[in-house]
Length: 591
Image (cartoon, rainbow, N blue to C red; front, side):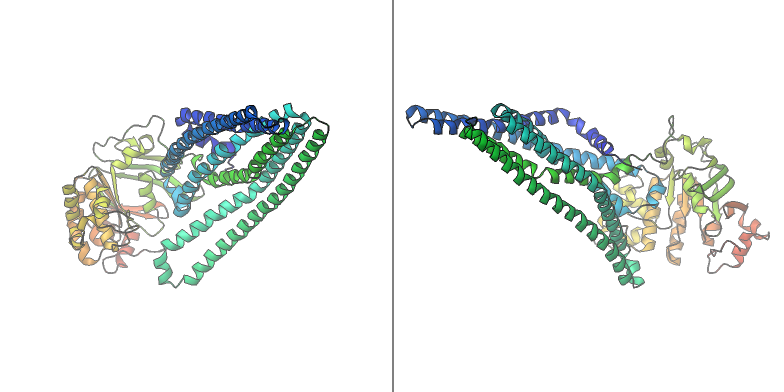
């Protein structure tokens, strides 16, 4: 998606307009302060004209002191206005940046499951951060630099026009040329700034990926390989940075030459007009004051324009995400899901990834209220995909998924997921306390309810061993806990949520035999009165199910009870015969 600058401005303005009265006041105050700065050289012109045209006497001294008092008063007024604008800016920018971060996160988290599986988490965080910082840079450049510069350029040329219109025309022509040159150069350089921003994001993502997978790197001695990957992308980033910085150095050299030229031209013509009696010494002071004022400001205009375009480039990636419609959205008239019994139906469901790779083909499955159904099949058969479709992490290509007769696509996502519980194969926990992680299942639960859920999931056995018990932080993604401990925390969370429909995706796969044995009672309690879908290979779990559904290559190839399926020459029977240690093997598709 091609993002234009106005797309970025539109998103920024959406937040800034909440404070439009403050912004108006800030611009008016800064505008007046800039005009006051233009007035001061006019008084200095009069000051030096009086010095050179009269003899010293008490009247002259009084007049000069009066001019100095006026200049001091103007400077004082300007100082007060700048204080107002500074504190106004200190109030505005942090709030807008906070609003932008919150809006970006809110929009980001509403993207689909598929959106996140195709992107680096570290890169997404980097994009949000860069977009908010880009606003700070853009607003500072525009407000503190470009806006007052425009007033000073217009004001200086108007004042000089009344002093000597030739001098004013020279300054006007030079200013237009200077700004045009910088604008064209900056526009041309933008593509390289965008390439640098993309490479910076890539470098961040590669580094974050390596840090996140430190355990794998150590296990497989991947230090050298990962360092080579990081070195490659950071070297590419270095080359782009060096190239763009060298381009900036070239334009600064051209700017310096242009400043030398305009100063010579203005002073040359000023001398000629002074020789002809058309300019006074005070006019020289006026011209030089404005020239120094504009040179000081214009020297940085190219840099400000370059920085603004770089900021637009930094913001572009996140703006593109915020302009990308959410793949999974609530229907226009979506209503909350109303669970009366817990009946689940997959009716002629077809689904493909990226519309090209068919994963599920004409799935027809009804799960009765309170029924416990196991999904069995080789890897890639579509078991986990079926569950993801129930949660509406993806939208189906055709067919219907219904819960108590209500299409999941026609109810709100929030209400749908509020009525579903999932214990995943590999639970990922927040870097928060055990109490907070378990309470995430029902955030209004009391401490006593959390502790009871933990007890039912046998979490208390290991939690009581920690010095800080339930206030123990589990580390990023729960890394401080073992796989079995993380699994039990996930089960405790599901117990606390107590949703009418429960999905267990290899929920006991990370537990040893002892842990599985003690948790089976908790699972029985958890499953009571619920419609349950279980993806599992452990026979201890499967044999508790009312019905077993066998999938292969995205189709339902068989279903029935454990005993009934063993009586047939079926895939399930072959899996049973090849079992080992209570597990069903993950057969390849051609078995």
